[in-house]
Length: 153
Image (cartoon, rainbow, N blue to C red; front, side, top):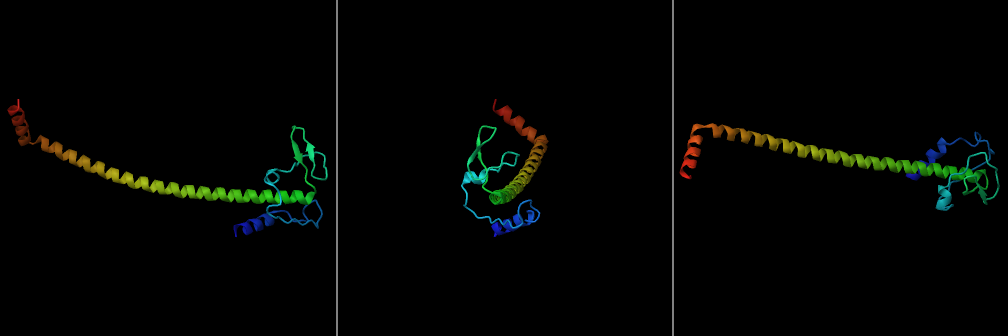
């Protein structure tokens, strides 16, 4: 279903055949698995280099070799495939980001709960400490501590 939506999005965002400089009868059909992974990843050269028909390697000034597309239909086919791959990749990246944010929000909630528990414990311990200080200031407490230190010397 996502592939159909992506294909329709790709087709609707592309210029119509009458808007292209090539023939108005040009029809490109995108089929999966027609090209190898290397050919799919390769971006066609858009520079002003010589146009060569066929798919033979052409020496490029950078020292590497590139294949020039057989015809404009093949180039358009590769361009459409590249656009579709980019859209799918972008959608996957958005989904990964969404999952990451959901996980992060869950961790934030857990840490906020733990922080609230720790704050409550700190408050309880502070109250207990304050009560113990008050008890230690009572005169009877001083008597017992004096008596205890005097008898155990």
